[in-house]
Length: 527
Ligand code: GLU
Image (tube, rainbow, N blue to C red; front, side, top):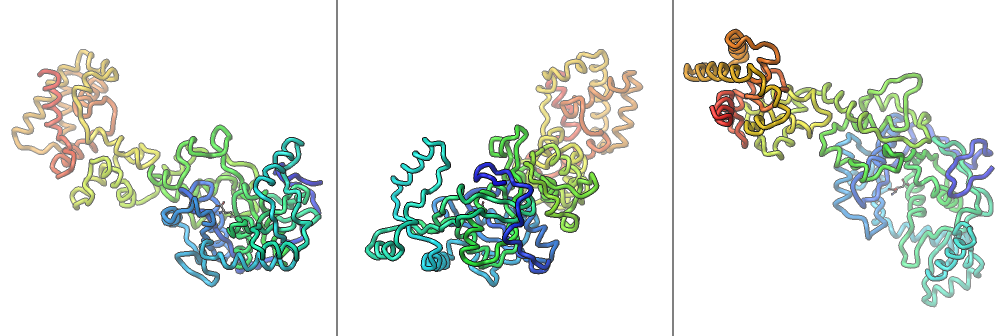
């Protein structure tokens, strides 16, 4: 049984593969090899995480290699951001462009002479050949294949050239690419996720390894680097599964051992299309800006296509993942990204975290909303801790906190009086009496210079209740509207001290005290 280049279905019962590297656990060397051409996407972050988990679990080595051979699209700022995002996720590496290591350099643009050397070796050993086909000729061949419903495989035109003659043409100044000669037999390899995989050579083109411009090609450099860096397990996205036969052919041509492969499934959006920007947040930067905790994201990414054996457990801290994660249990089926589940995990990790940590993470969101200064003085920090602990249970993500704090920071009595949501409460028979009685008590308290504590507030509410005979919602809803603009919101015994104390702090946006709120509310209703 064979599988076609583009059918992407692994075969279940293929004969044993040619190579299966047996590695003792401590020899494990894995790499994450991103191209710095944009933001780190969740799919790539999952690849990085799985490599890291495998390295840390086996006591092996984790390597970061920057694949920047696409000079048009690669940018240094993306490399910096990538490193930043990986660090934020809690991932580290033992060798890399920043960390150095015995197989440096770890940035492909610094390795060009190495790629030239091995391409020439393949050429001199007759395993690769010079190709002088012009782009126009190749395009004509592709169109012909398309018209005849064939795969657009390079027809091997230059394979037939006499090597000495080809070298002479090059010496005479003719530019040519170097192509690898794919062997006339099936190409097989082992994949931990997909099992034994086999591709018919009839569907694998002789790949260009070095372009006529001298620029090496991904499928080639990845093999040179993985082999020279002694990578034992290539763990990456399954979009590279169809590249793997070309890479295996290269290992074979160079007489190098073939590593183990593990191709992780594609991540889909809820509509089962490949996860992309149009599905909303997809980059690590996006999730970071939303106030998703790195523990929640790593936990969620590990669950995409993996579940522990014999259990329904879903909460795994990074050290627990290192202990429990197994590559063998990763499924080849695509995984659907479920934002609600990520939020569920995020709520869990927010709840589990020390309040001080959440306060540190939440403060910048209030800073950029113009609600807090950049540096918090002690009194402001203590007050802000109370704000955060009052609101944090109501959010999925930390960036929602400033919106939830509107009760505290913004008060618009005219809008509250005009809001259809408040119409029933404002129109109720007791509302006017409650407003008046509450106002009198609050103003009295102010004139005595007495502080409004949670206990004092409770006592005032009891007095208002006795005087107006309003109780329950009839009593509390008008007072809530008078103090916050809305008839629902956080408990008064926590909210009142926050409003009172907040009003004494030097904040960029003044927090109104209870008495200030009562006064502006009465002005707005013309009393
Ligand atoms: N630079 C490649 C990518 O970002 C890496 C592929 C690989 O891991 O071999 O897709």
